[in-house]
Amino acid sequence: MPEACRVTASSESEVISAVFADYFAETYKTMLVGGGDEPFYQPSSAGHEFHQIVYRADYAASALHEVAHWCIAGQARRQLADYGYWYEPDGRNIETQRVFERVEVRPQALECLFSIAAGRSFGVSIDNLGGDEIDPFPFQLAVWQQVQVYLRQGLPARAEQFRCALADYFGTVRILRELEVPLIYIL
Image 1 (cartoon, helix red, strand yellow):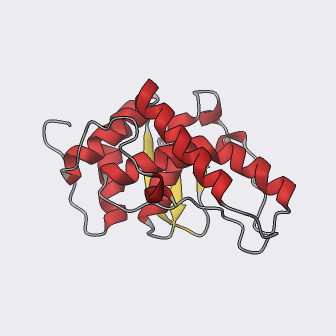
Image 2 (cartoon, one colour; image 1 turned 90 degrees about the horizontal axis):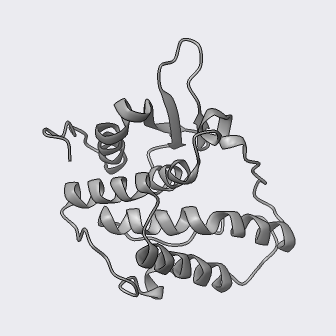
Image 3 (cartoon, one colour; image 1 turned 120 degrees about the vertical axis):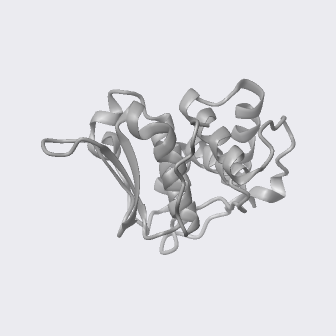
């Protein structure tokens, strides 16, 4: 943790944003910003020094999820609006939903580990309330399995730094081992 953590926030999402800023604002010129109608990543542009990871309203879960996407995105993707990815809105059919889930396994696994570090509960997000009805268990299991892979093989560097920063700030367990995250935590 930086010598003097500058966290002075009131809501949980503001605390998460402040912890992020303490670690990444200067080195990556990136800020985590709440209040968005929809999550979005905006690279810096003329007149804006910082990249912005915008999360939904003041939702802590949205903040953690959007940081997970940022932690996975490489340097080239971090130069593109929303990392250059597509987003298929709510109302997906089963086939499109499964494609969405394959892309979401890694970010949701990181979000799970960030949630644990922040002392929060976590539940996999299907993000398809108006779409075809599907069995969520295969996706939930895939996220849990990816959590196990991360615990066994390690997280991406920025993700590990953020997870440890959250654990230090919230006073939670910093070192997790494989299988210590029960599947029921993800369901």
